[in-house]
Image (cartoon, rainbow, N blue to C red; front, side, top):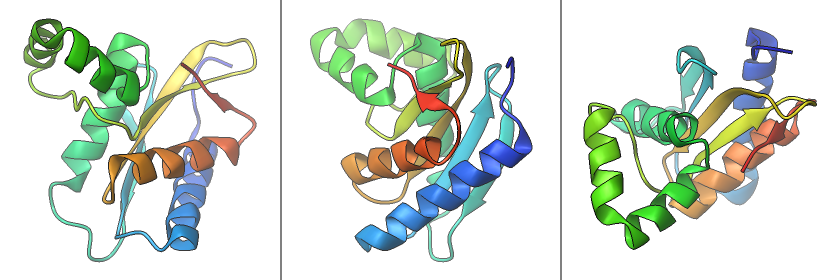
Length: 142
């Protein structure tokens, strides 16, 4: 498989929202990007604030851009802040260094996309992103 498809992306959205409902989270926004960073699917729950698209996309874009989860990017920011600030600048500000963005890989470990979630705490956002990926025949990468 070389690309995430719309059906898979929609399953990720639905499962992420279902996880958020199960946990009683605040309204979420979820985006699925293909491996080139182009949105495949996006949805925002009623009541989610208007900046959630950009934050969710920044989490997913950062994961794709650096090849690790946005949680790892947050850890890198603590260890090497100058590098992460430079990466954020290089991405025109489209990188959010906090949990909630995960890489999506296929059965041969090829990166085929990323999911980003925003709306609740970063840890809860990440739980929803992981639940979304788990609902498909795909898996989360590093």
